[in-house]
Image 1: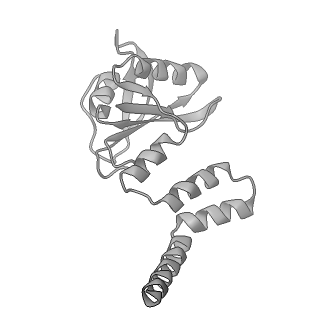
Image 2: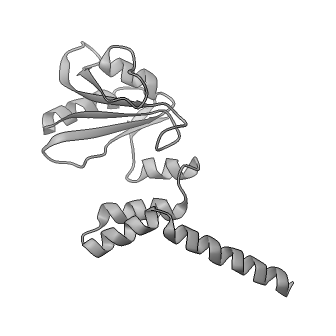
Length: 169
């Protein structure tokens, strides 16, 4: 199954980012750009078209991340287009018409990254905390956890507890 979602959030903006991840990503992206994929991890200007008639939707940036060297550990792509409601809706509509391609649930990209061993549970939770941070202190705390400092502390505590348990036994 391949999933897609608007990653930049709803509403009008200068740029909208749509992510696609899963086994079918390569073929899906080729369908919507009507050409070959660009070099991995290189921002490339591409035309994004309707699948049925090749009508131009928008021109923007495509970044191709072949797995396992992607956020999710699967083949992944990011489409950066103008953030009008009409452009975003049109691209999402095109993706929804493709077999075995569905809209991702909230947090599903991070869930897949966790399941594929790309991030640990603390980092997954800290990403959610960072996204929902409203204050500077909340942001700082989430970044601190994301950077792994808290994870290192918890690992040290775990090692100490394991030593204590082995001594008790």
